[in-house]
Image (tube, rainbow over all chains, first blue to last red; front, top):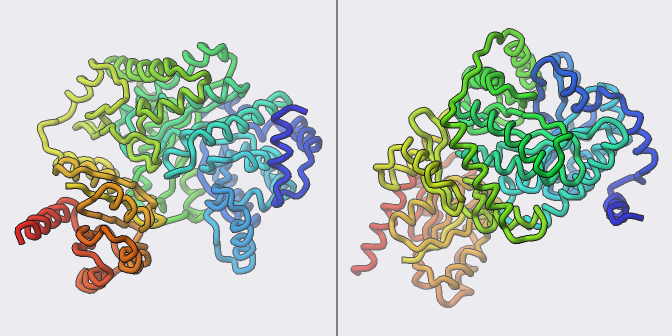
Length: 454
Length: 137
């Protein structure tokens, strides 16, 4: 028996799993309808795919949400997981699920997939027969993704960096890399049976003044960590940054460099997709303004040429959205995509050059780390600040990089810390900003720059 | 001047904490930032370890009061914290409440300086004034 299979036996021997039947699950994946695979939807799409967010505790409410989404002409269904399951606390999730079922009050902020189990959940997924994307935020997602794939969920979001640095203070990063290696291997293994399972990285990170160079480097590294384990379909992503031209340039550079680095490791046969998140920062409380912001995000995603867009709702500032508001965004986004036409192809060569040089320089520094494997190189690079994510709560993050917006709301690096931004790029970034200010003014600017959409 | 700071309890709101770090450094303090999700014991341990002059605790989700009740009993177990200036700031109550009610309560818990929904730089000016006053006396 392989070492991976031994580990899988242990993981699936969890007391919250009702006898996992490996052979039956393999047969299910082998014979699964192609409409369940987002890789099929990507290959045959004639427009940008629209995917909302959403998860409710009970089977019935999740089912009702999906009915609303399908009525709104959704392309990809989400399954958002509750916070207890994300922290591997299945006992609490179970208790809260029972309370939610008994009292018709939602005691969880998502669907406790492990507690519902794959035999039950698969009925819902095969009934709707749409691609489903697993949205979670789990550093140790080994059990969760096993149950997801067995349920017919063939897109797995996340990664060791993007699901840790924005969400956790002290979950050990080295463990996260090893747990995600398991995820990649299991996805790669199932991908040989039918169409490929798609993996997607979470580009928004902290959604707070993260410069595009850092976002792209982390997208590329999670992509490489996934492809080197045999994954054949991968989505890189980022969220709306605040300036249309910066988003367009980010999209172009991300696509070009994803292709470049995939080829470098001999994985040019993998399908790489680009995903755009509607604004992930602080939302306006006014619902009409929120609708306008969402609509603008859709237009920018079209300019970026994204393969998929992930939507927000007009109730973002208030709390977990109702199924009505959530479905309304899907319908509105589809409408906008439908009527948008004749978009000009624009970019900014200088910005592209600067951003490309920054990404190459950081990637080179990561590859030059003396460690023997890619994940250890990446681990060391985060530890020593070669990769520095603004506003990460994690203790390992360096926190020496400072970013603000220029007058066109582009995010600029004014302090690079240990990140090896080349000198000419650094001078360019700083020259875009008014640096003739003291720290008090800069702190006030940062506060303003975080809340630009409110 | 050494200052230990961080966000108390199960509170992951990191933005203000980072901005505070920047501002304190700019004002010339030697900053020991414990970040988000920090418990009282960790604050006091760090204050002893670093020989801090000031402990500045912050809270955004409003849970601070639950933790603040334990300040005096816990502090009495340490014998080298008598001269530590205790400050707390942020959003100090769940729901709404007025500063005139909140400030005396926190003073009773053992804080020298209490800033409820006070602008960052105003709060840090208050700290500077307090430190000046107590140096001369």
